[in-house]
Length: 129
Image (cartoon, rainbow, N blue to C red; front, side):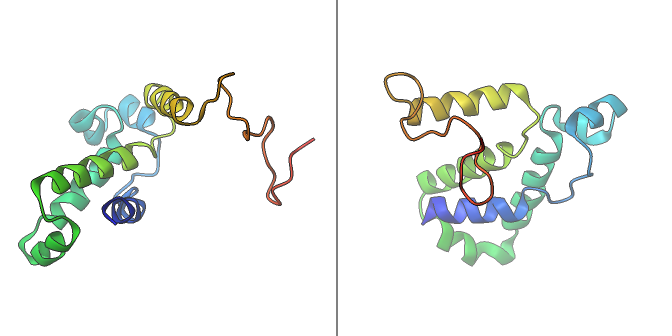
């Protein structure tokens, strides 16, 4: 349940206060978010805003339901960070890390999962020709 709730909450908050432009554009423009956070500025800002809200006293009961131990708290926080940062699809380094984890989790002997499609699937689930 902890992981599932982290995924759900992360999905809800991943674009909170997003300025609507890529992080690279924020950096080029010298936007305050880019100066404050550096890489993945919009995503880290979303995390900070949501996390600070969750940590308010009025949500103490909710926090007790989400995690009961220090270990669960740390796991929940790390899950949220990882999930929200995974939405920064333009960061090449994060993309390489995600691809490496994917390959480690799903690769077979030849490096490609046996069930992996070789071409993109269209909306009906059929393989493109």
